[in-house]
Length: 238
Image 1 (cartoon, helix red, strand yellow):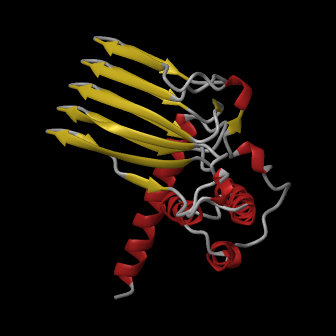
Image 2: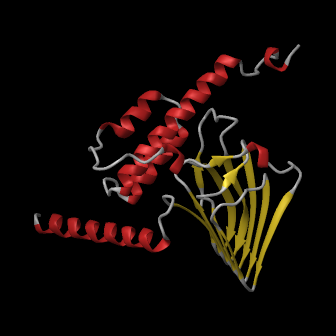
Image 3: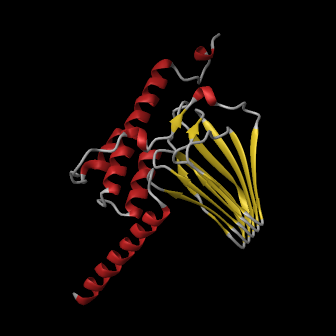
């Protein structure tokens, strides 16, 4: 009996459906990213819609995410700009673990680099920043184990990357994220982050490729000012 004939194994038709859903998902995320770049969506609404796009397999949900968005001037962002690059030929052996330490210091990894299948980050009285927006991924699940003791770990991801993040915090903070499809494409990257922090923090943020931290902070401050202005107008009208 072949693998495809075993009970519960996905058939070629099932895999084709999953692949089509993933392609639709990527196109929707590219459209949402383009509207976000043109300030048609604020940060919270952008993240909400990206979460729906990443977790749903329903075509009606995809359509609803774009239905109320206005036309934007200029070219639409290419899908590959917001979806991680997959390079199967560069996939490291599954048993290899890439370990990075930030002890009384800091590490910063970004730009174009190959993400290992398994990675461990330890920050003790230090900080680590991992920017995955231009990174090259192996297909399938990528596991990152994080530990922060009186230190901090920040991970930056592109909108098109499916993410699961769960951990424990003792007198600190650990972000909880679940942006994964119910039926993930086995050829698409899925980032799983697990770990703990003690008197420190582990954070994840979603930014457009090419968007600097300064631009992202300016966008958030502008959004906060707009919200405060809208609240003042509402209070005056009462």
